[in-house]
Image (cartoon, rainbow, N blue to C red):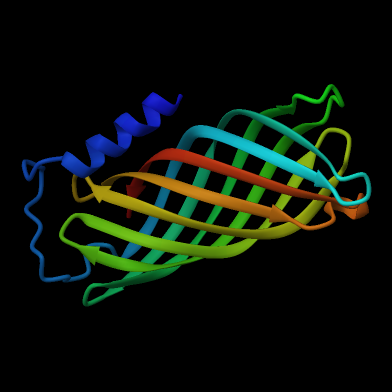
Length: 186
């Protein structure tokens, strides 16, 4: 999985200028609009029990969907994103706890130049597990999107989810994910 993510990042960064549409570097608003897309990647997690000082770890695949809206003024691109991802992460400590659904609502701000949009994100998240219930937390991230055509967007994104005292269990949960994304821009 890590090779897939690294390969996708290399493809995004080295994609040439031979696309279906000629983009200028004037920052003329080509990132303004809505996007709908799918995501796939890898996630890893670590929990810390604040009472017993024990840790648990796990990793697995993640897949999901997202919807975003951006508005570009000059080279500044701002907007928002909502996403749903299904995680296939089970803790390796034998507890049987598995991360399930993760919902997120994020504000995005960054720089759009030519076909590239690099951005940072901050927002709220709601995560579920099979045994420990569900809880709200914070999410932070970075991303890079590339316009392949006027309507087709490819990207890579890293998100860090932080849940403090998950569902009143005295467990702090950290979840990280790297995803490749493919979307349609309206």
